Length: 437
Ligand SMILES: *Cc1c(COP(=O)(O)O)cnc(C)c1O
Image (cartoon, rainbow, N blue to C red; front, side, top):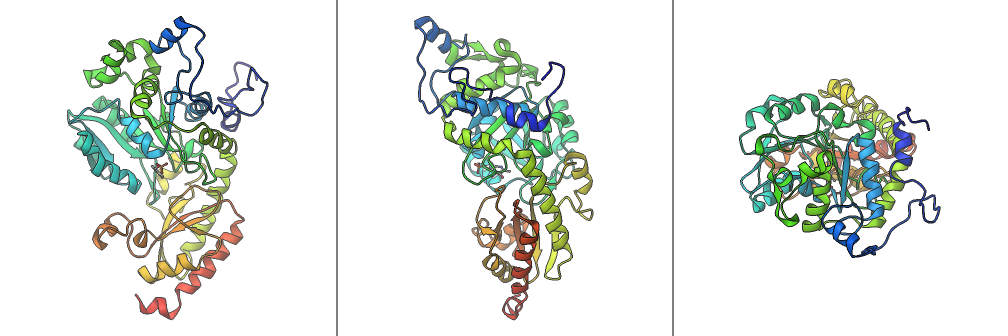
């Protein structure tokens, strides 16, 4: 490849971060299943511990296999550096850790993955962090909620599960004018469909557990930093642009510039919080990413066909898929997700709760489980599972009303996916389901 050519997405997805192993010639990425790394001598060890040289000390902080995944994700998102960790939820805590102090606030979208809302509502207060929730459909809601204590805005590019698309560019401008970073959870879109940094996001987080891994086998999370934020701005981020007590008063931003956030994530975040990713999980995720473009293309094409089919089905009350021209997010989807609106969406089955249960029990090709972004088609009825503990009113507010069914469309033959939905929907129309309405 000549120097001037910028490699395409699919090329980066296969090559970024994983050149042949120089010591063995191994073409595949080695799994560095090691806890620690031998120092060359005492001076080398001292330089590593002082962050004066880059290298490996202990796998809680860095590991060559997880580092390959970090480099690949940074390349795919168009960012400067990456940090991978044990799960998507760990990534969210790790991402906020250098930004927040007790008393600080995150302004978050109300339309987030349910687990993220729970994490923010129930666990952040234990760190002294406060989450303020706003409806992202009007970006101005973020501006109104920002206070001097606000340290970050938090949205999902394409939200799980409602097919909500956020106006990333408008929200990024509001973050910029307030002098705070915009953090985007890009799990459902993946960098194949949307690259939030191109629209002004500072940080991107992922649950790599989903499409990036792609096979429903390996938990993982990631943070990618754009490297574009001035952490010394307004004195708001002392962990990144003030003296760090753990490293003799080292100022990360002065010392590492656009790599400050990434280095801090390893040298302080992973070191002190500890949710490192297993090298094997990073290796499986690297394999998955090699086919990300091909899979996402098929995921989106299948989801589009299934959504169009369901929209016309007599047993279906409504379909919430941003790829449908009738959808309220279709215009934003065409701007931010021009290659497809992802493969996760909800629909309403006529007959309410009883019909929803009948449907999930009748599906054969679909697996009934609490996951998304697998090559296999997945289904869940939130009211009877993930949102079971809530009251009926809370369920409806969370988009998990009695009739809501969430699909994660896989990459099987689309005719088989549709045939399975058709036979299961027919069963919801049975008198038993009708009587339970
Ligand atoms: C699954 C998911 C998470 C949490 O990730 P885990 O890997 O399960 O910890 C966060 N955000 C979104 C959008 C998700 O779908």
